[in-house]
Length: 277
Image 1 (spheres, rainbow, N blue to C red):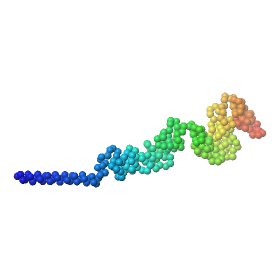
Image 2 (image 1 turned 90 degrees about the horizontal axis):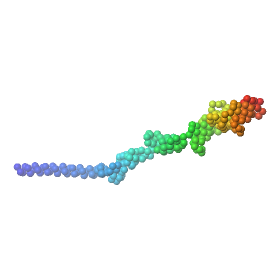
Image 3 (image 1 turned 90 degrees about the vertical axis):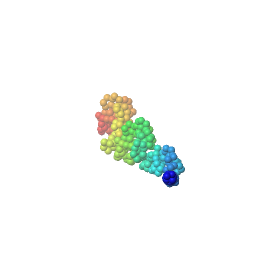
Image 4 (image 1 turned 30 degrees about the vertical axis):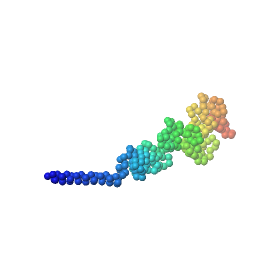
């Protein structure tokens, strides 16, 4: 009976030794075949052992070749931030991929929240023009190169007609922000929008004073192409340049016939505000 027990105990011992050897062999095999996996489990947060680097040498938070995980490659122009590829991709000129927008959806030339670069915020009351924050101008005015703040009249400036840098061609004038043909007009006359060829008198028209689209303010008149204060004049009198307040008689003055600056031709006189022979 004792011999039977001894034989059974020996069999159990042999089986236990077999399993121990098999388990040890499995551990050794994993160490040989998967060293990266074993080493990986020993890395701190955000670190990993990726191919081509040392043990736990790869920073998954910032490495664009291993962004968030080994082998996760960011596209050209992107950076790895907190394990995520972000930043500007291959966008066209003046466009970018800024936070909160789609790929290449941000227009850096005009976006006041990303003026010239992502995150470049314009101050209150400013606009973004050509990638630069500029003061908010009243309608029809702008801050163009070479001029002061809001000093450019987009309505009548032939060098900035309707927008900064919009140059009218030779023989054209800027009328209400649009380049139109000037025609062979005499000095002081012009072809402005809404009127016929050479029909606008720039000398006296308060809606086109000195240039097409230059509007005189309330209580002003256009005198010799300049807006001046009208004053409280009686009908037929006006305050024209070179004269006192309400000193010009528009009814009979051949130099200001009917309006300041309306000059009668040689041999004509001014009768009731009209030049006649």
